[in-house]
Image (cartoon, rainbow, N blue to C red; front, side):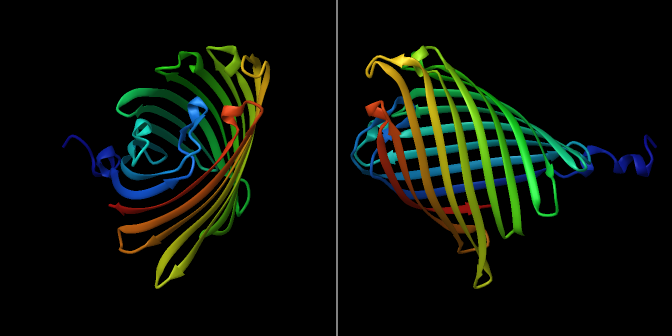
Length: 293
């Protein structure tokens, strides 16, 4: 025999690979259709058909090491603003190492986004992280993020970004009810100096699950705030640009079958800036049907 029974039990083949998939279709109303990366807003609303798909794989490499691979697809198809129909492809990889009380991870993402079928945005992102429980109900995570983005038709906005992130979780009732507070400091170095900025961001989320007819309904409430301070002089306003961005969102997910659910969401964003194209508000209301297996 080539190996003993105990040796065979240690082979990677005995650690099953997990696969998952998700399909989604929905309808969304946006009262101010625009393109955030270009500081472009229409001040007009429109309806959009939303499509989504996700494929994921998790492979244990050892008792303490896991590899994850994923692919995400999303598409918005507007009724009138077809020029901003957006299609996005995301390839992801994540390597996790469990050191008992502390976990480390390394994630990589490549994002390709298209507008009306034309190449628009490419982004590469790499992020090492460390996380672990710091108490019976408290969990903390820290990460460094480096990214590079390319905008096909506006190369002046091409940028390299570095950020530090910290998240703190309080599990009031485990995954049934928990809070998440996060902070991020980001520095973006663009090709054109007028788009260089530093930002401080905070977020607050609350997730709550309730039972209805023996099916768990997931509710999520989120608030995010970002303060951006630009380095270069913006030619239009002849001074340094300053933005304050905040967004509120409410999500509800209601299971209707063992593998299917309905999602409803509403969000409102208030973007304040001394640069008029970036000074606007936006409301979004939508729903989608999701099937998972």
